[in-house]
Image (cartoon, rainbow, N blue to C red):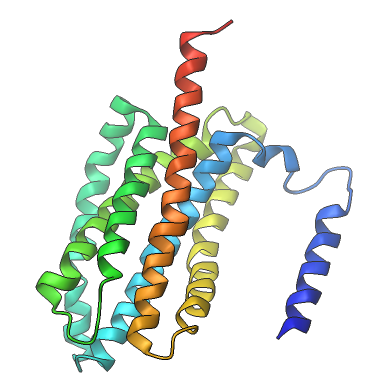
Length: 230
């Protein structure tokens, strides 16, 4: 296992170290703090929603023996909240700013994942899963709306396509990278359900909260700069 990981790290380093005259993705494009935060937020939101739907589908069918149809129905509240929150997220971005809305989304999503981290073989849907399945999509919608603005703010006209491409890449990478990383976390536990709980708590405590702190710092720096333009 270490051999392919090492080889991948070496090849990635060689790729990043290579210098070309007109790169498809200029390194400086990602150095803007607000853009980096926005793309990170999109990646985390897509990763969190993708991982939760995958792991909880397994949990409901394997631990509670739900049918595939009943399992699909369990995610109806998730979908409804995701759509409903997205309808008001744009208004919130216009009123409070993209950084604040992204921060609120990360914190809300972290709480939702933390609630799901309490699952065990006897967890009920209504009291044990539903609260997390409501808070996480609410947070994800806020993240997507705020992060989209952060990712595309002040992009030169000739780089608008690049901005859209990086956003789509972050959204596609999220579930792939998130599932691989968190399944590795889950695999450290001998009990399957305990592994799922560890995966949720890692995503909530270590990643979402860290990104929320970064968003808070960015928002504070931006507010200070506006008050003291000198």
